[in-house]
Length: 194
Image (tube, rainbow, N blue to C red):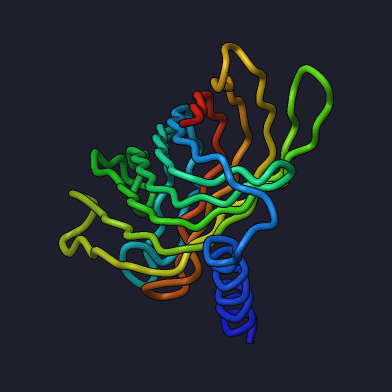
């Protein structure tokens, strides 16, 4: 029941995010591109890559690139992301494998004008491909729904250029045998208007 509810929420948020791309705005939107990178702490995984297995993860990194539309107090964007984490142990035995996640998300932002800087909230939904490498005898490669939530702070550093610092929680919905791939990230990057 919880899985069905998560899927329904993901579809609802996807529809709302995509509606922002197709809606006719009352004011013209400013286009932008962004690039962010940083450190990520991937959650340990139960039942991965096979039922009954347990993975303990090490720290990782994440890179994000996006193109979006800025409507003033809110933004919508299409984002591509990549994160990779080394496996610390597989079923309590040291391992040298890794888990790679490629994601495509539709994100929405609510920007708060606070004078010289801009705090914001974000949420997004989409799909992610989770790839297990050299972890077990069989290394699955699964595509599933994913989402992200976060908050950040943008500071103008030049005309049309914002320095961006953010916290982000990313997670897939359940795949394989009730496995989820989630991570907490601290990211730094730039947003450039064009």
